[in-house]
Image: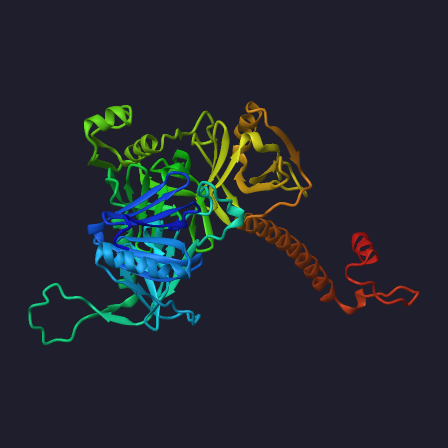
Length: 527
């Protein structure tokens, strides 16, 4: 072994990469080079620990360096163990440890952190590792639960990998019961009281968050917007803006969103003219458990202002962002937020166009199923907010039909419905629109050359207010009938109080005609 300058092994994989390459051990370090010229180099002085274990692709060599970064190389054969052991001991003065993996199949154990990796042990044997550097966020979906989210489902697969032929970990949830002792800041002080205990799941959650934050410190925070109200999904979030991505940090959820996943931006004034909505379209959508959010809806107070300074030098502002940003802002919050998003994402911000409602607003109030909201007729699309946020491009609309416009059953309705018949065969309906909005809305649709038709005998959704109106009409009609019937009964009672001799049955001996018979009515008229 001492006469050889290096030891080399063929057909070895580095980490989760699909490429194979040559793995070389030499006195000055460890190297791996793929057939596509991808390389990994570890200096000899940095090698701290080396272990050998079984893996999906044969055997694996796991190398831990001094900063706790972990490198993994798969594809070794069992007969390679002796050569590796001798070379590692000779070149780096480190023993090659053999690690046994837990194959019990249990789903409970202990967790530990090594560098940016989370290790799950069962009976003091590692069962699996999670590279937190590849995670995009963590949240608490329930009591005693901590979830770690990995690559978005819509993110492109690595080069050379067919996503239909591989399985990918989307997220994993840990159940962490019980409490743990809170770490004291002054450990040297004698404290006779019992140590304060905190929930174990919160400690675990905060630890994972710190690992994610550390892995994201490779880029510098440009600006932070604090306690921003989000309507969809509901909550208040801190928005941290970086060069290539943003982070949404709430009390329960923590997300990392790449700017490349942001496809649309909208800045819309609410009809109350006191609030401004900022809408972000995402592809792939944001996920909370099984719920997907293709749009984020933030709300700002129109008169609220912010004074901030961007963490950028003049050179970056001039060259990289082409003077789209300023070093300092003192303006309404919604203006600053939309300006920063527009510059960092390089996306256009869509604002309301020429449409005005009957009251001069940019949107009209309506309902989508049981959810009330606002429908914004924009220049190239319709947008319903806040929930469920619905985006309807003009180019995908086949026909728009109006219903409950005219008089039905002798009455009139104060509201009408509108249904978008899409070219793909689906229908989107909005109801309870004020009758006064019809003229402006129809004129807008015709100006955009969208086909319009009216349907009178179509089943429609009746709102609660209209049910109340119908009840009032029914009560008036019922009271009128009751009043007429009471008057007739009073007339009959007066006749019954007359003397008996006035009563003269007809000669045929037939029974007295009933109160509401036509014969009785004719007899009363003759009298």
